[in-house]
Each structure stands twice: as C-alpha cells, then as structure tokens.
Length: 342
Image 1 (spheres, one colour):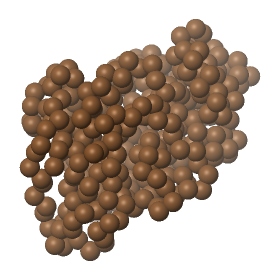
Image 2 (image 1 turned 120 degrees about the horizontal axis):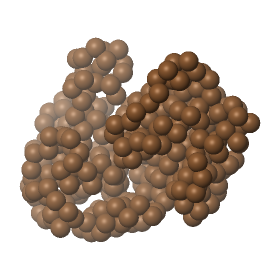
Image 3 (image 1 turned 180 degrees about the vertical axis):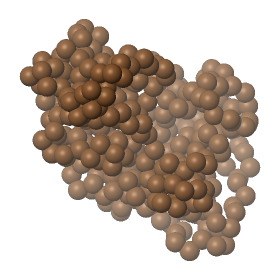
C-alpha cells in the first residue's frame, strides 16, 4: 500500500508519498480500501507540531475517508466485504462514564484517526469495527467526503443548541468548510441565517448558500451589524468557528437567553469575556466539535433526501497532499479539499 508519511514535524516538504507495509489487522478491525480523503486544518497543525496532540512518527494524517471494506477481522460480524463506508474519526474506550451514558463523543480516553494513530492519507486503513458508517448506495464518494462537516454542524446546532425552525442563527466564518455546512444545515432546518465572513467574495458565496443577511467583518463591526439586522435583539444562536475576538463579538451579538456553540479557536485560544454581562443576560456558551457515528449516518441519509452536498474547493491526487496543504493555508477558498487515492 501507499501513504503520505512524515518522519518529523515541519512544513509541507516533510510530507512523503511512499510505499509502506499494510496494517496488521486485529480481530476486531476492518480493512478499508480508501477512495477519497478530506484535508482539515487539524492536519496542518499536526504536521507542523502545534496541535497539542502527542503524535508518534512516522505518521500518516487524515481523520476522514470513504471507501469500501476489503477484509474483516476474525471477530467482526456487522460488516461485509464490498460495503461502502465512511470512517468515523474517533476510537472510544467504551468504559468511561460518558461512553456508558451514550455520550461517546465525550469519551475521556478518546483517540483520533490521523492524530493518535495513522489516518486516511493512504490507500488502505485498518480501523476498529465501531469506526465505520455505511454510505447509502445512492450517495457518491465525493458528496459523502465533502459533507463530513455537516456532522460537526449537526452536533452543535441540533444536538447541543436544539435549533428550532424560525430562530435566528449567526454563523461566524460562514464561508469555511464547517461554517458553510452550518449555514446550509441551518437554512435547511428553517432557521433565519446571518452569515459572517472576512471578504466581499466570501459573503457573496455565503449569500448563495441561502443566508438571509451577510456581514463582511473585515469592513464592519460584527456585533453592531447583527443587532441592526435583528432590531436590537440579537441572535438566538451563534455558531462560531474562530474563537478569539470573534467570540467576544459573538457574546455582544447574542440575545438574552441565547446560546453560543464554539467549534474552533484558530483566531485565538484564550479569550477575555465580561462574565457579569454573560450571566445577567443568561447567555450560555457550549464547546462542541465531535460528532457521533449516528450523527454521520443521519447526515448521509439527509444528503440523499435534499440536503445540498458541500462544495469542493479542490481535488488533488494523494501523492500531491503537500499541494493541498499549501492551498488550505492560503485561506482564500470556499469548500473542502479532497485527496483522491489511486
């Protein structure tokens, strides 16, 4: 098999496409021949050595991949060779209080594909039998891999925020992979969406996704614009992918009793917030970001029932993963970058 491997942390030059030994299949694992993999900002952080994760090297990146089952471990009974599947990024312990309560995305001993173990930048991957989700026959590989971010958006907006039709949602970073998925999902669920992005080109894209209003926060104050659009009331729900100063603005833009979901922190990991204002207005802030297999299965089902597939910003052969990282680092794109396995 072949994989994109790095032996030391660094820039894109450390990524090496080479032949590697196939994984030894454990009794409870499934071997998948991958057709597509997705590129995430986490991959760039891990490659650079700034993710905060303990990563053994040599290492293979990639949390998300789609393909077909080609071999079963001796104790696997729930999968069949030839079944099309998507990987579930997280391996959970099954023993902690959260796992036993069904909150497996909050497992206290969670391990991540492409982080704690080799990931999907490869032609094949061995994963635990619980780390697969069936892809419906009517759903193609590219719509499936492009739309994984819907699962992150669903966990935040539906499972955590309990979004209701007719509510106003502010999506910050609405042109990015997660933000555009949140925008389209919220529109699909009947919400009134205000999309915020960092350029006129990106706000035009967000408007095309169905946002009722758009804000270019490089040109105007985010909170003031939201209050103007909502008659001074503020948003019912805020979906923030950035953290940092945008989270401070999100609090100002939230109505009394509103809810904020934070799913990323690339704009700043430490934020100073006026907690007197927070508790007096009964605003809640929730950390989100890990979906469950059931959520991913629901997303795959909805893609076949009218939910628009997420956009693809670019396609690269697996061997050119470094070029995909360079493109992602520019941050002037909309949609997802996809790696195509040979």
